[in-house]
Image 1 (cartoon, helix red, strand yellow):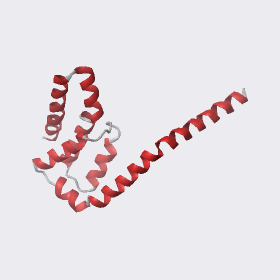
Image 2 (tube, rainbow, N blue to C red; image 1 turned 90 degrees about the vertical axis):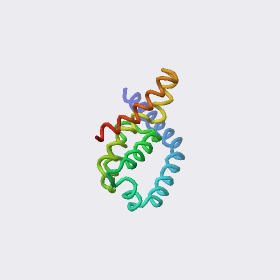
Image 3 (cartoon, rainbow, N blue to C red; image 1 turned 120 degrees about the horizontal axis):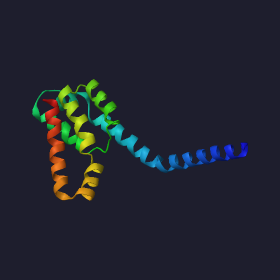
Image 4 (cartoon, one colour; image 1 turned 180 degrees about the horizontal axis):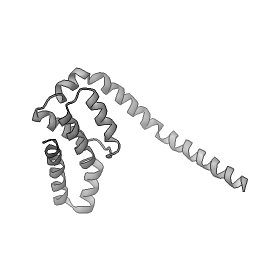
Length: 135
């Protein structure tokens, strides 16, 4: 009995280590990219592009959210940090709405399961919906 438990714990730890080892390269690339973006996109630039009530800010935040493969749970801390970094509430809500709707994975899945016409409608609706949420 005790031997079975130790074997299960050992197998779990070995599997976790193998998974961490396999993803470590991608994690390092992500950390380097995040550091570069943090230095390139200064708070002043961020405030300039998303810190106002213009329609261009809404469009920029919606388009930037369209290209991130983040689910609805992962977008909440990003939206909060955008708000604390100086983004206006409207662009932040547009980003938080568009990201889980029109992420690349959802679009590819929609295209594969529902076809081209429904995918086009899905993308248009996913672009218009954040604008309606902000209004």
